[in-house]
Image 1 (cartoon, rainbow, N blue to C red):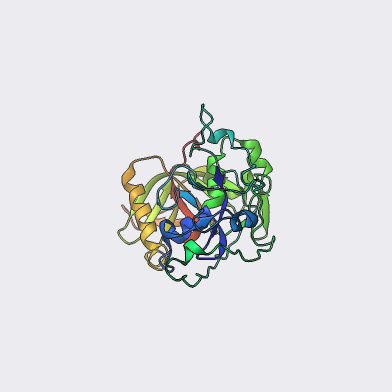
Image 2 (cartoon, rainbow, N blue to C red; image 1 turned 90 degrees about the horizontal axis):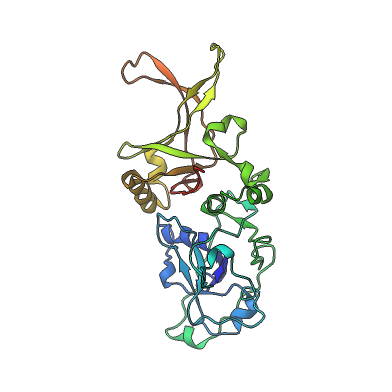
Length: 328
């Protein structure tokens, strides 16, 4: 059984698997999911058992992943009979021919809002040695507004501050166009279906303030900075031109941006692996819209050529990853 949320004892809070992944790579906070205790997100179920009754994680620490991350039961995990998470039917895409659960399934828990301010966490004081085995977990009162216990697809966790979560929803459900048209997502003051908020890079002129994505043609490594060149081009007609013509699109990641990033090590590992992998990769970003710029030619600096370009301003809203199926 897969879980969208889990209660983290040391943070005394409910986290999504994307919160956990984010914290694992955050160099400003001490966190290692392999050493944390995660339990059922249902308060009544959790308090019925001792602290040894835990959940485990899947794909929580792998910087480069393809399969959807999640929490899941261990062989010894127990739940009360009326736990709403136990009553859920396994997703058809997560069950094999023999009825056994697998780790291959789409992300079913769609956040309805991407928060642009990062969530903050406070680590609880450590218990004396051995206390965790003796004391039952007493959950704090959680308001429904902050962390609603909605395990089904229709009423998934309302909000997330982790960009990877809505991206995974879009990528893993890409073939289900009707679902992406039906599920809403709010970013800032803009609300639209997932299928509309995720915009192919070649159509970036349609609207600003969207999540732009496209297949990567090349990642230029300038040692301390990077440029992402997209495969698709933007068709655009300038005022002095008779008809539209194709323009290349790229985004630039500065040294200062990378050096100041709280997940610098993980990001550099991710981007360098991408360069060396030779696999088809896609880039997703939010917060900037590439605009037409004139840049000098390398062969003849006195001449310029047009390119749609933007400087990424927040690496929390930038992802390079594999995304099988997006070519379909």
